[in-house]
Image (cartoon, rainbow, N blue to C red; front, side, top):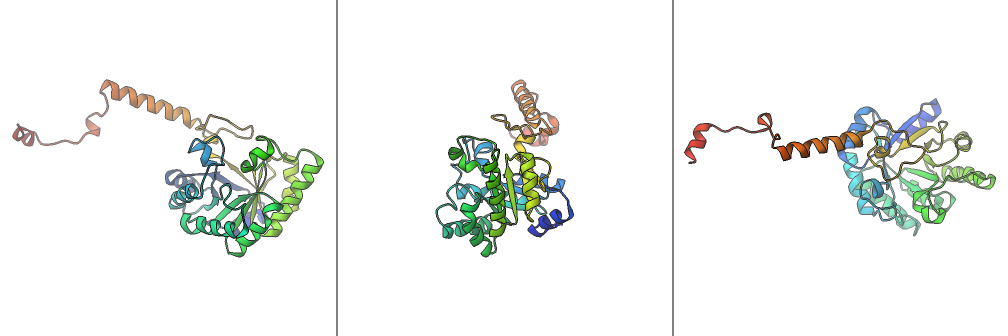
Length: 275
């Protein structure tokens, strides 16, 4: 059954946890879809784990459209959310609506995500009024890494905690159908989750959120440049891949691959006529 924004809302109402992962390509999205994931975020994290940038800031609308379209071709049942990259929505409300429309129309996703609280509520309101569902994102917002002075837990002081609660209420009032809470203390995330009617999707925000999301390369051990504290490694796929690559290299060098079962035959009679 196709997951929709209504599905997410219903899951919160019923107390059913929402599962999400990131994906950036057709094959991975298809596997996640077959596994039964509720939602897939085509995150601008692709800048780091796919394109090799130091952060998410260089990612373009063209990057996001390209990867979102690939994911949508693989995911038939998951709700696909396309991430709006840095400076695609901050300049003006009009530009935000235009770029959200591009991501949905050209990328094929069913919703978009953008970072920020009260400051981007005009954009959230305008985008939703254009019939484009919006997932908000507060707490540690990676596009603001330079303003934060690094990747740091947010909401630890009373003032900061109260501000995050208000930010969550603000994005809900603006029309967001869900909100990502990133690097937020677990007890604060629980308060936020109980304070709003839309689902909270946690990443480093504790178990009491309505759902969880991880970058799939992190949880599979495929990205080793940096591993956040909140990541649980469910498999060491990176080690398996490296081992397979090494075995392939060795067999090529020894001449043991390809062997007969991987080779196409031709009649000896035909070969004789070639000499």
